[in-house]
Image (cartoon, rainbow, N blue to C red; front, side, top):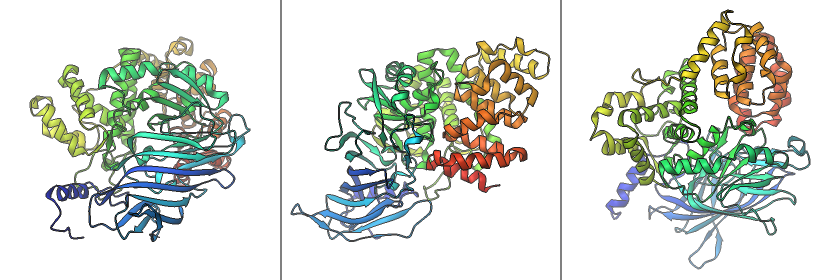
Length: 614
């Protein structure tokens, strides 16, 4: 579309910049108009597994000649669209839905005779909405009432709200949600602990967020305060265990603030969801969504909370402008997580955590195509497939930042990183913008910290650069000597110091024996240390994985695990390993046939892919 010559140079520059950073996973023309605020008025219908009502979008028009609003949708049934006219009345607007794209859904195109400040879209979600899991009462802890929760990242917000579904657009939001009596509604917004739901559950998010941080949960939910600005929500039968496990939350907030400046989201609350939640955690602002698999009873897995909290700076405060730049969210957050863990639990624990993280990154390279091992790709964001592997960018991005920290020293690097967060607060950023900031604020004055060739290698080349310094934990080195001797049969199981190991040591040990230990050795470990029944899900998962590969029969506890845990990190590798073993293939199919309905749609899609490969 030609740009009118009367358009100011400033607006023209902004349009060119936005076009260069266009998100290929969104239909939205956010170079023309942007959502500044969203209001949702919805009713939850558990019988039909739908949310229905309307979304009201407040708009900021950039291109004064534009007369079309394009929103992202997926499986939404649109009944009508209204616009607020200059006289203050809501009037009908014509609209159309594009042909379905399997990945992106459908563009909702609203034709406008003028540029309204507000638009309302009346709609209903589909029972199969990609973001929403509707759980039957028997799938919850009490067995009495149903439960529903969302997972909007990456582009699933469009399956439960018509929005500009791209991290490039940030907006404030509020909502009113009707839900059945006896159920509490919570959202990634200000949650009133004393609310009763009379007249609907009401929410307000005053800080602007991208659409992937829209979140909702409805169910039998209780709350416990952890401190003056933190609380945990969970099902009644899990609330006390959750509160005990998360008791250090206030200390974590203070530790992060000491490093990177004030927490800007008022409160840091969490909800421990049912086990079918597909991820370890989701950093929804003001209400982090957490898997119950992190509850080990000894706080040994709370680095997951440190990670989600760290997103309050890297990701939520400064957001990747499109998913091509996801390392700006996850690599930064993984780096910050280690710094928080070190401040709370000491250098020894942080060093072990870092070594395990780096070792798992190195071992993952064999299964990742070289093109997917990069942190970023050059050029415009015109290829939705040109993204790095979602798992590798976490440790590789953190490793890159740690390399800069080691060379510059923390006295220099910490203010540098805090400056990035401060200068880009509540904005969406690209890799090029970070490189520009890095050079202007660090490398131009100190080119000895990292040459251009090495910088390019970290960002655009596969693998981990040879210059990377690997973390070495003395405690894990001692463990390695024992492990090697035990594998060779030179050290009896009675002399293996496993009863004194912390979770990180067991994770390291089990990672290293996977594919090396035989069935008899796995059985011996199980007999002495009871690993098949470990209450630590990270340990149990690694033990099951190694057992399947070794041919040690753990079907009974593994069946229980796969039926009760829906975290992708666990179930996808386990099904993949089972399917590779002819003796386990039919059993895996039978288990999945029973377990599938217990998983979130995101997990179902990932496991389905593994079965289709067979």
